[in-house]
Amino acid sequence: MHGSESDALRTPVSAAYARALVRAFGQTRGDRDELLKGTGIRLEALDQPGAHMPVSSLVVLAANITRRHGELWPLSAAAVWSTSLQGALDVATRTAPTIADALATGARFGSTRAPFVRNRLRKTARAIQIEISPAVAMDEGLWHAVALAVSLNVHAVYVQLLEDAIGEATLQFPWSPPAGAERLLEHYSCAVKFNAAAFIFEVPKALGARPSPFADPQLHAKAIEALEAIENPQPDTAALAGIVERLIAARLPRRLAEEEAARLVGTSRRTLVRRLAETGCAFRPLLDGVLRERARIMLAAGTQSRDQIAAALGYTDATSFSRACRRWFGEKGGRD
Image (cartoon, rainbow, N blue to C red):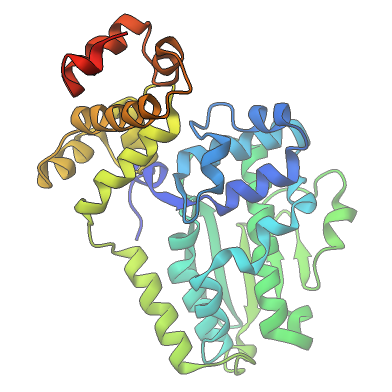
């Protein structure tokens, strides 16, 4: 499932990655704000259950961390490359019948969970390999950091599957050993090779038929089904309006623009307009509806002045807010 780079940048990815990164490197509110600069993501949004963000936002976050902490930062963020963040991909890989099946599963669905990379399964006379490459443009330092994080996750999976044979596997990096490579090597039980032809995880072919210690045909089938549903999603246009409304509400008092809303849901502005139209709505009425409901609740509470409510809803002044109230609630609602 290899689309264009622009498609990859718009692809939604779990906010769990970003949440783990911000928690690992954002010790203060100022640190966290700096990490999220340019991502278009608000800190509060990361804690929403099931939250997603476009790959472009995650790439900017990773670039911010790399600039501040260097390309070995994944060594200080174990939660980011833990198998628990991989969801159905981890389950499908571990429960595959054999090591060869696990590698094929990882190669096929790795980009489903991590759309910022592409995976290719290769077989030679002596080995089975997963070749991993960036799906979006990254500078050298950022790609080294992302590749390190990916390699640590791959190692975390296969150290469980290969058990005592993990030492026969090899991680290959197509660059020279970085400064501090001795720190890096402490995290691997497999062989590590630098200055290779490509970024590759390699397992001897003789180990391919080895049964997975976690093989479970039924669980494997269900996990594959879940991954296929992610890979080929059925458009849920009815739910899209609710997602857009929540994004609008989360941005207040700043007004969410239609273009930004499209980016946050991982699509183009044109596609967002079309999919909303399929449900008989549009972005502007959704925005108006969110503001109206917020205004109704705040006015009913009676704890804030008109000026305060206007500011909280992104109006430039109370007069503009009062005009909106008259439109929403009639003459009575517009009185100061």
